[in-house]
Each structure stands twice: as structure tokens, then as C-alpha cells.
Image (cartoon, rainbow, N blue to C red; front, top):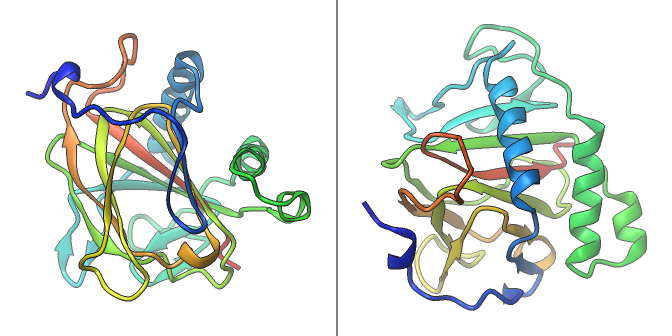
Amino acid sequence: MTAPFDLPEVPREPVSPAPGAHLLPGWFTLAQQVWLVGQFRSWAAGPVPIRAPSVRGHRMSVQSVCLGWHWQPYQYSRHANDVNGAAVLPLPGWLVRLGRRALHDTGHPAQHVARYTPDAALVNFYDTGARLGMHQDHNEACRAPVVSLSIGDACTFRFGNTATRTKPYTDLLLRSGDLFVFGGESRLAHHGVPRIHPGTAPAGMTAPGAAPSKGFSHTS
């Protein structure tokens, strides 16, 4: 098990690995993180329970629960037809406001912040062995920025380029409470999670494993 003091030292100042991509470390307080874990538990309980999607017949190691729109590979729908046919939970208004605050805090123009109205959230849960291969978020008709929040164990987040799944890319260490936003020139950048760092969640965090990614986006 990797202990918190075994993690590589990285600058905890804001980082922009590419145009339109912004990492704000420690964006959430511990109390806010714990509250979000409670929200996650209620979302994962249903009406559409958390599940591991299948891509081309292979089950992903990442488990997901969706808000607003249900995602399955290559499409969105209002009902989870690949799970139990139930309607997905609506996207809470506070998540929309949180998304706007995220854009404001990462330097987006006021008019872009005011127009930002995400209608879907894909909440990913990573246990200690989960991985997410390099991919693009290109199923959405709208190309507004994606807002991602990290909660739980730290992860290595690989942020690449728009042309290929291979190099060049930048490996970032995302810790619990960090905010990552990517849009503009980087909206279709390939990205993935090659590693979870077990045992690195903050003291007082009660969630088992890790839930290091909540992504907000427009689907239409």
C-alpha cells in the first residue's frame, strides 16, 4: 500500500498543463468532501444503481452512476436501458452552480460562466485496482468545458493531446478536493487514469476505495 508520504512531491499551486486546461489544488474543504461522499452514496443506491459499463463486450474496472443523462458507451439517454430501464436522477441545481463557480475560478469570461448550464454528470468510482484508458469525451453535442472533481484516494491523471492516445501527455497527481477543468483547445484532449494511490484519502474521509472523478458536461 502506498502511504501518503510516499506520493511524489508536486507543486500545489494552480497548474495549466495545456491551453484551456486548469488544475486548482485543494478547491474543496474536507467538510465539503465528506458531504459529497454522502451525496455519492445516495446516488449510487438508485433508482439506477452504480454499475460497471461494458465497452465492446468488456466490462470496465471503473464503476459509474449518472445524473441528468445516463451514459453508456457512445450514447446518452434519459433511461438506463442497459441496467434496469429506470429514469436517471436529475442533475441537482447546486451542481450547476458549482460548475459555474469552477469556470469562474479557472478564469473563464463572465459571459461564458453565465451561460454554462451543464445537464449531465458522470460520477466514477475507482477501487484500488481500477484504471481508465486514454479516451476523448466526444459523445456530447456541446463542447462546453468539462468540470472534474476529485474525492477520496489520490490518482495519477494522464492528460494528453487531441490527436492521439499516446505521447505527448502530462501525468498529474490529483488529490482529494482538487478541481480540474478542461475546455477550449483542450476540450477533446485524450485523458485517463492509469493508477490509484490506495490509502491516500484525507483523515476523516469515510468512503472505501476511491471516487476520484465527478465530471460535469453538456450533452446537448
